[in-house]
Image (cartoon, rainbow, N blue to C red):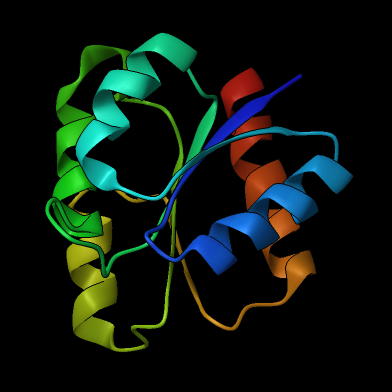
Length: 124
């Protein structure tokens, strides 16, 4: 089963991600604090990350950059899911290494399409 790590400090959001990812056959790894994300990712080896931006240290921008510095996650897809709907945040997130940027509230088919697209790219 494909592992997807979700890092979001909002417990309601991670509960929703757990439900929708399991429904699509994924194995979600859920974290409500970003400080332990790298350590747990190295143990779990997810195929894709979903990160919120507005979290206590490190925030999603910083966590994205930290993941990209780790050799084993250099090419692992990162999808940002955030309430920040401004161009500057999008530019900073993509510059930090994010592969996609979805704004909350998002449509489930948009999330599923992004996940599938990025996981399919890994198989090429």
